[in-house]
Amino acid sequence: MKSINFPNFTNSFNLTPPISTNNLSFPSSHSHISAKTLNSPLLLALCTRNPHTQNHSDSTFDENPNFKSNSNPIDPQKNHSKPTYSSRNLQSNPTKSSSKGLIFDAGENGCWDSIEIGSPVVKRFLGDEQERWYMWYYGTSEKQQLSGSIGLAVSSNGVHWERGEQAAASSSSGTGVVMTCGEDWWAFDTKCIRPSEVMIMSSTKVRASSAVYWLYYTGFSSESVEMSEPPEDCCFHFAENGLSLGPGLGRVLKTLPGLAISQDGRNWARIEGDHHSGALFDVGSEGEWDSLFIASPHVVFHSNGDLRMYYHSFDAREWRFSIGIARSRDGIKWVKLGKIMTIMGQGSSSDEGCFDEMGAVNACVVRDNKVGNYLMAYEGIARDGKRGIGIAVSEDGLKDWRRVSDKEVIVASSDDLDGWDCTGVGYPCLVQMDGDEDQWRLYYTGFGAEGRTGIGMAVSQKSDITSFRRWTGFHL
Image 1 (cartoon, one colour):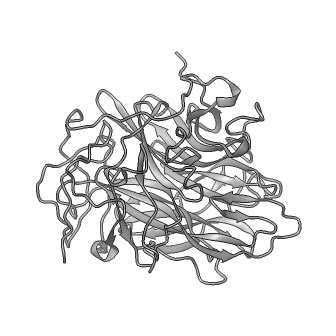
Image 2 (cartoon, rainbow, N blue to C red):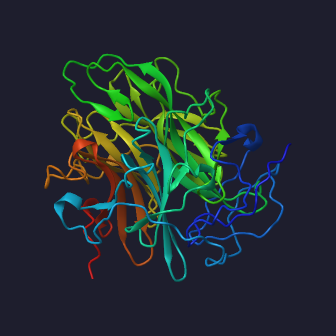
Image 3 (tube, one colour):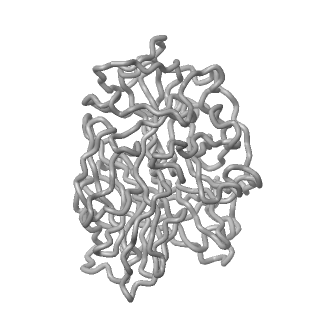
C-alpha cells in the first residue's frame, strides 16, 4: 500500500494553543486522502483527557492499524505559538439582558466570520496546573454570505475566547479560519461546511504520534432536492444557509456528512468516503426517511470497534425532522440503523403542542461519565417554527430516548426584543465538567434581531440537567 507521509506533530488538545504550522508539510485544507487508504478494520479508543504524544521520526500509514491510547507526556510549554485576538468587545460579566449568556460574538467588519457564526464544537482538557479549551465553529462574511468556513478559538476557562492564528493553508481568509469549502466541482461540500464533532483518536497507522484530530462535518453542495407540499395546518419556516422548509419553498440544498483529519487542529486533510462526492455515505433511497439530506453527523465513541453517528434528516412522508443513527468499526465506513425511536416525554402520550412537535435536529450526544447513561441535547422545532433546546436520556444510546422535561431547557430570551438570542436558540454542545465541579455546560448558537448570531453558554444547577441558566459571570 502506498504510504502517506505526515510530519511530526504535538498531540491533539495540547494544554496550549495548537503549534505553529511553519515549515510543516501537512496537507492543506483542500487536500484529500482516499478512504481506501484507511479502510482496514480498526479498534478505536479515545485519548485520555491528559494529552500525550510519542516522539518518532517515521510518520507513515501502516497497513495493519490498531487504535490505542497514548502514553508519553508532552511538554506543554514547548514550541507553541501565541494566539491573536480579533473579536468584538464582550463584557467579562455580561449582566445586561442584551448580552446575557453571550460568550463569543461575530468578528470585526471585514473578517471571515463577521456576518454569522454558530455550530460550536467545544472540548475541554485538564492538566496538572491548568486547563485548555478549544472551540471549532462556522462563520460567514460580507463577501461570502452564502458560503461558510470553519474556524478555531481557544480559551483557558471556556468563557473568554480568543481567535487563533490563521492557518498557513488559508492565509487569505482571516484570523482563526482553519478549513474552507471544497474546491473540486464534484465534491459534496463546495457551498458551505459546518462542524459537528471533533474526536481525538490514536492509531499505529500514524507512526509519528498516537493521536489525530478527526473532524466530522456537514457539507453543503449547490445541488438541491424537491420538497413535498406541507400540510395545510403547518406554518413553520426553518432556514439554515439556504436550506429552507416552509410554505412556498419547494427546494432545499442537499447536505452530506464528511470527515477530515489533522495533526494540529487547524490544517485539515479531507478523507474521501465511498460516495462519488467524497462524502462518507449518501442519502437514503427514494421513499426512505432520510432521502432528502444528511446533516449534523455527531459521532460518539462507545467502545473499541463501536462508533455511533447521530444525524438528522427530514421525513417528507411524516413532514417531521427525525434523528437517525449509524454505526462503524473504523469511523469511515458506516452502516445505517435507521431512525431513533420517537423521543417521548415524561408521562406524555402525545407530542401535540410540544416544543419539538415538528421533530428534532442538531443532536449532541454525550455519555455521562458519572452515571454511565447517554444524554442528548437537541434543537426542537415547534409547529410555529420556534426553536428551543431540549435534553433526552437513554440507557444504551440506541433506543428508549426520553425527554428529561416536556419543556425546553433553554429558549429564546424574552427580556430584550433586540437581544442577541431573542428569536431562537440551537446547535447545542454539551460539556460535562470533571473534577470538583459537578456541573454541565451547554454551548449554543443564538439567533437575534436583524439576522444577528452569536455563541452563548448556559450552566446547569449542579448536576440537574433539567435546569440551565444563561451565563452571567463568575460568582466569587
